[in-house]
Length: 359
Ligand SMILES: Nc1nc2c(ncn2[C@@H]2O[C@H](COP(=O)(O)OP(=O)(O)OP(=O)(O)O)[C@@H](O)[C@H]2O)c(=O)[nH]1
Ligand SMILES: [Mg+2]
Picture 1: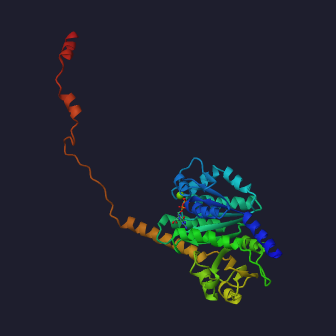
Picture 2: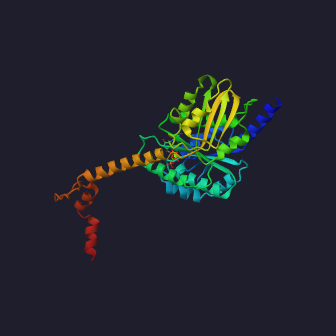
Picture 3: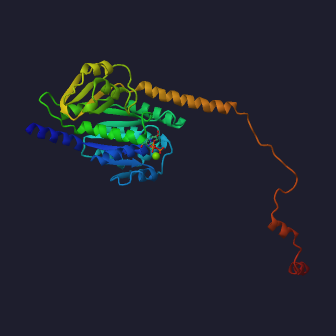
């Protein structure tokens, strides 16, 4: 009992040590889900319309002087450059773990978030984690170009903690937003204890702080099997498909009572970790993989879609005959200006005629 109380206090302190920063429409929508779960949250946007979508949000920081970035990443970077006080405010937060959440495909989040993440990683001792939304394949050219460029920039930042890649092909946006916040919350708050072992706060911090891709699965005890957990980690989930190179750093398995997940089966899929942290006695079974390779193949497929859409546009421009509009001159007025015509045809007034006689 004593141990249980101690463990739950520790886990509560972990949640109290996490702050969330949403940037742009998608980022602030997802961050709002975290805010409702009790996290310290800051919402950054350039668009007042996006801001009204999260009505009731406590802390909204508007990028002053801007009203939307319309998919323009450079404009968004300028916006944060002119509003550096927001970065100072985040640096000064008491929480030591910051999750920056944004879509890579728009303008505001895609342009602001990498700059923000890099500055916080350079200038603070905080653990800087990201949650990045990737576009669905039906979306337009511009979204794919932005997403690829944003990921390219993000993956070159040194000193980042874990990054979660949410794939908008996987489900509708509201579900993705909800599952992302609630699964991570389930992991951060899990305080199950067992004489067989626990995943403690430090182990959770280690997994969160490990750079690379981070995925997790949360299943109710009655749904747990090795196959269902693997399915949730690899296909039936909200994440970008894993890079198939068998590289990971840590595995965390918090087993549901009476339903032990076979570690070897997980390793078979994600690769050999430095260590597997195992816990028991949980209501939900939670499995976490940290330090995976970034999903390079999937990000390259975003570039391929951009290229395909680019080529379609170029081909249409090339194939279209050059059209011009010829001049026309029918030697007459096209439309009559009645007022001008009336004045032109008016005979001189008696006053004017008398004036002429004065000279
Ligand atoms: N998962 C998820 N995706 C979203 C959500 N809202 C928009 N998106 C996706 O995010 C991308 C557009 O990014 P936004 O976040 O709307 O763009 P922004 O950062 O506000 O940038 P601008 O509006 O261009 O200045 C598209 O791929 C959308 O499909 C959301 O609530 N959840
Ligand atoms: Mg927007």
